[in-house]
Amino acid sequence: MSETFAIPQIKQVQVQQAQRNLQFFRVIPGILLLAAIGYAGKLLEQNVGKYAKSHHWIFPNIEYVLWAILLGLAISNTVGVPAIFRAGVATYEFWLKVGIVLLGARFLLGDVLKLGGVSLALVAIEITGAIAFMTLLGRLFHLKPKLTSLLAVGSAVCGVSAIIATQGAIDADEEDSSFAIAAILALGALALFAFPLIGHALHLSDHAYGLWAGLAVDNTAEASAAGALYSDAAGKLAVLAKTTRNAMIGFVVLAYAIYWAGQGQAKTVKNKAAFLWQKFPKFVLGFLLISVLATYHFFSKDQVTALANLSRWAFLLTFAGVGLRTNFREMRKQGLRPFAVGAIGEVVIAVFTLGLVIGAQKIWGW
Amino acid sequence: MTTTDATLDKKIEKSSATKVSWDTWAVLAAFIAALLVRFGVVKHIPW
Image (cartoon, rainbow over all chains, first blue to last red; front, side):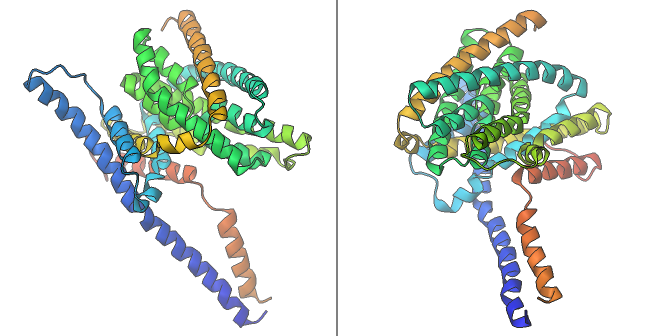
């Protein structure tokens, strides 16, 4: 091949580099919007209560988590998110993962192993029960089998990430995954508000509630927010339980990939170990590693506090993103049947996991 | 095919095959932040 043919390839590398640079600049306005909404939520938490008190009004103490979500929801469902901000708003999952890794500094390895062990046992029961029930429900409602698989994985493991990973592995239609994602997101938004109310009504301890939110709420961002809305301690536990659930994603997706390949409707998985590694959420390893470092006093007490605060800032951007990403009009467009299957499934999973957590609470006496 | 072409081919192929996921970037960002705090570059993070 002569030099003249090499020129387009050099250009291709340059174009890729330019696209990467452009992508970097494209996310900045949205990240600034996330930060502005999150910070506004924090200011509202500090000032609304004070203002109401000084005027002798009775006003509930609303935490920054809820303010940030409500502000995001208000923007998303009224004026909408302008195109210039969308790429940056989509980074909320990145901030979520940064927050989770840094949160590892607040867990000693012994706690992680103890709580993670309990979570792991409950997660295994939850995943098995949820997949079996969602599959049955999908058959009863005559949903397409692959859509049923996507809904089952979404509600059993970890929401949107699990659905996207499974879609690729089982060659499901884009339309099916859009349905499943819309259903999971709509139900996650409802759970966000319903779970703290139910938790308070049942007088659940922070420990029991955190575990329940981590086991039953599907998307990691919503599970973290539902936990944090209850209390700081419940938020920590919700993240730990949800992270344990996330760690299972590779195994569940692999099982589905093997099943659908056996049916001749998906590609065969050649290297199972590589498949598992590819699907494994790396932030779980990051969380564990930071926890190990904190356990062996790599960080001083003040440094652990600084890292915990940094983790809170990252979560603040996430919670703003949860509100901005939730658009009820868009969700309504996706149709009722997958939503109905998801909703029935979620209610049953929530009741089932609540039973599990209450049972575990009696055994371990939290 | 010249060596330059082959290298470029590999580079293009590698750049798409080894694209680092957001997940990994998040872990890297968190560790960089943790190291900056650990070695005193960032001393205090208020909340």
